[in-house]
Length: 606
Image (tube, rainbow, N blue to C red; front, side, top):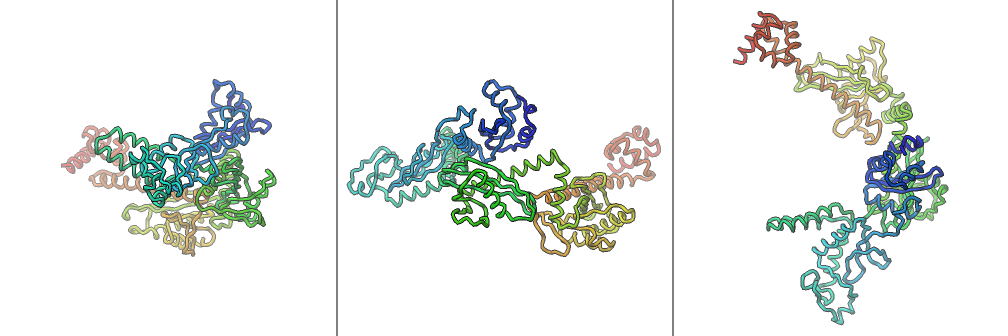
């Protein structure tokens, strides 16, 4: 069934999908979840359902039943697999027949003993052991164990080695000791503190710091290659590449997280829209995710919006909060709730996943507005610029200036014009600097602004609401002086944008402001600056080329502007004029002038 046959809302959601890993959920016309799937690329995977007829009848029935969808963005494909598994077990959708099992993923366990064991298990027990994982790729878990045992002499036996056991001296050394893979824990041949030091290093590696193992593998590969043992070196290379893909802990499933509710917010400074993502985590697993959209009316702070979201979610899903993960604690009277503001670890990673989903929802909404109501998006952008740049009116007309010169030669300036936050190329203007000698950007800026706005005033043309000059405090001061001289100081807002750190300078303020890098205001100003630079550089390059050509042809006695134009129009370049024969030149400008041109270039080349 084609996507064109589906409701418009569904078609739109599919068109807005990101090229990111994630989990998608399909609903039927009644709003019932009928299928949950994972994807390395959400856009590509979901689109594939509607782009062809499927060989399996059940898949075609699924596609026919799809009436709506939702999705959750996650950092990696492994996280998508874990989240898919958790959501399927929670909702048991009709079409997820092949995934309705209780398959568990392997963990690496470090036992709580005097001489701990390190091994792979599929059973998570509350026995005091430390568990790392889960590992969706069993091969990776096995590789980690094998490599750790190559580095550290760990015991593999299941003996209950206690202080009493060692006092009885009933242990017997096994083959692992004789091949130097174990230091004889069972016979007390290694100190418990030394062994525990090995375990501390191993826990560090399993927590994500694989630098030690990677360094070991690199040195071993180099040693084997030097000894011409290329097959063994290749085997280690495969382990090295597999280990590089290793992630010790999953973001989506973590036994250390427990039962928490996660609220993440995406709310750039100055933006009237705020998006709050809520994730319901039980037993370390995300079982629900939803994003709420709030429109600020009184510039409410982020913590207040999170408080609104908590109340909304509690009412909608009958949630009783116990432990809530947030970036900042909301000002609410909830003594029974433990608010957690993580700085690192699994909870911090869950918070980052929530923020990524909130940001993606914002992107989706902007795409929706751009598609269905472009005027609304334009006005929203202009309102944002007006707020960020402290303007008294909506900046529907903005102009930006940039100077271009190389060591003072052929100095030019450019003026680009944006109307309704978009380039208006028919209004672009070039300026050849006339009164400034040498590379003086400040004087050039004063000249250009004076010429530009004196002429607009004389002709009664519309003035811009905002002027942007490419440069820092010096260029901005020159622009202010020019406006002051022609009586426009205070009537047109003017700012400077410094290139290095995207600093925005205001007249009379020595401290710049930094606009949020995700803000539409900064995007528009950067576009203005880049356009002015491109437009100015192009004009400057053309002037240099024309100057070089003219100076060479101007040196020929008896050759005037009309002859130069005729030669360049026909031959297209000075190089071709130089290479032309006397007969070819005569056909264009006549024998006398052809002789003069031919003699000049031949004498020069000789």
